Length: 506
Image (cartoon, rainbow, N blue to C red; front, side, top):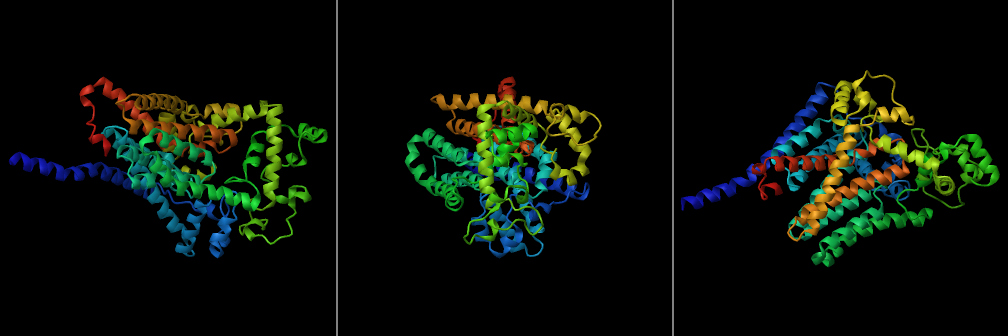
């Protein structure tokens, strides 16, 4: 009887003991934020609200949130709906509400990172240390203090991996399936990089691995799938393109057309190889393009597609004319890639080199980065392995200069990331192929690896200049894989220290 009482007491205290590490992570994160805020003067920067290209003009969001977001064809709708809610609830000073929102998202990221690492089998102490170390990283602090969707997307991806493991481990319960499919759909509805193809590939892979439950999971996934398809279909209806963003052509033009010297481009236009639009720098104001491209159809269209500039005076790139401009850039860029891929290949190389940069080396983070410049250089040197971080800080590095790209690349980060991705792929495939393998872990690891590779490969194929910024979206996932590799190394060195399987499933 006494043994029974002791067993029941242990079971009663188990949830409390299990919650202690989460409290430690939350407390460590909170204390670090107080320190950075009070001692180092890190403040939330919401200056992007009024003028960023990706945002609907705030006066339009206030006056007609649903209509302006519906007719906003350059970005998926979820982030602008979030901004609209903040403008409505926050009144004349929405920055405080937005700052609180980013803090909550940041806390969720670090708690989710700990929970994900525990589900992957990483021991409690190492998972707590990893989550706290990430909380102290300059990138985590700076992106948490800047209004943009980079931090929310990093949180969504971590939460998606956690939810997928929970879904596979707990017998594909309906609430777990709803959470997972909703989270990955939210990523699609926030940024166009998470394409409908990525979403469908993830859903298809999950259904294939969990074949006994495929029919029920397919039914559960239908609503999130329809929401994603609806955004693409909406843009097909209003601008004639089945896409979540109409900027692909202008982004490709940056990689391909801008590489070609202007005299060569002029000759190409004379030869009929490219159009006159390619003589204009992508994302230029409308008055720099030929008048024929600036004409609007003789129909009543929403102001969000009609105004040349926003209330702040910056160009409104959601103007309807940019749809055809971008399409012509895309046609010229694809033609040049097919006829002479060298310029595009050089841009891809530079994009990957920039992807290896520290995510803190980004101009919109300058205001806060100056307050932690010493800590930032130390982190870049020791954790990322950036050669230039060991020297004195000087002029801002040139993002399009090859020697500068090499000197500011995180060599250690690249090495660790490649090793972690390779090891996680091997473990994931082994778990799925072995009859008694951990299928939940295998499925989760392959989802993480595929998502990191998607962001890196697709992002670097269509973007040049902000590649290290979108790397931050997958950096927590890479950190989790790196600590899993370390965990397995420690386990091999000391088998007796292997964590209990039940304990690893917090």
